[in-house]
Image 1 (cartoon, rainbow, N blue to C red):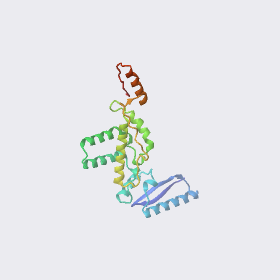
Image 2 (cartoon, helix red, strand yellow):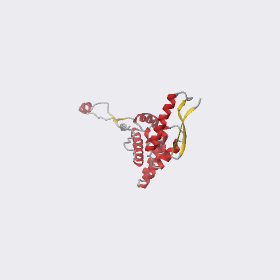
Image 3 (cartoon, rainbow, N blue to C red):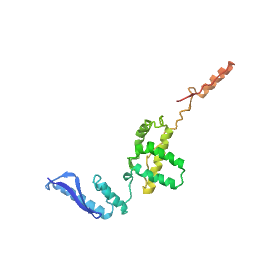
Image 4 (cartoon, rainbow, N blue to C red):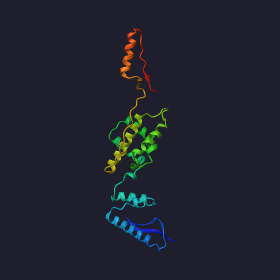
Length: 227
């Protein structure tokens, strides 16, 4: 039994790709007809300039090579799912240097990249930056304790804000119209661990104060803080 194969020419090269893993022996007319229809669609797509090799054959060993050729020849633009976060970050940092961003600020960005952004998001592509992944990132980041203490909400917001800046910069560079990383994202509430805890309402506090002052004795006000 022969394995079905699509055989055609693309960008000056001969392409032979397995046809969806189907096996047929020539007697299965429906498989032959489907293959003929699909090859016609491929040839029409090539003719019209809308064929993207990696979308039709994502598991092909030639996918990466044809992707580079398509982009280099100006046949199409780079797409969000084709760029890894870790691969684009150096371009973003280089542009910040050209813009004159201070070295101390760059050092802070690089620290965030090294400690939190690249370890968790680096192997993802820009199409994967979705709000649904934020919860897992927060849990992972809180377990790191890089400086010996749990990361705060303020810091988590700063990391995601920086990642959104990186993604927005990539969208401008690659002209990704309508691209919105973390669509619907809302920052975590800013919680100051040293905010005073008031177990009583303001009216109750005033009432206690009045009663104790009426006794004529000394009074101390104790402020409790969350640690």
